[in-house]
Length: 119
Image 1 (tube, one colour):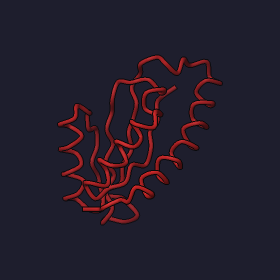
Image 2: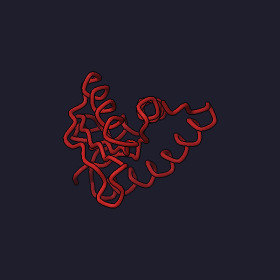
Image 3: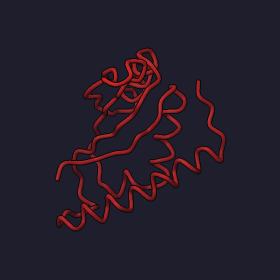
Image 4: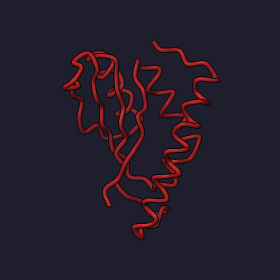
């Protein structure tokens, strides 16, 4: 299991916060209401097939729809896990949500790589 220190978690949350600000600005510039519920894609990288399976199980238990779980084309030891949730961009950019995703990923030998949504 990957153990993240408090500093590692804070650093990851801050890194996501910077990216989230940019994404929210882009989405708003397209005329989308940030408070409106929509399909949000959550992106993770897992350190192997077993880690991907474990992360998938946890995400499903927490109510997320896992839509794919595949090895990376460039590095078969790295697995991509994609999940979806019906939520608003504001809710998935909240620091507590981001911290939760960072922790869930780390507890399952993975990294939370961020989110996206169709415009």
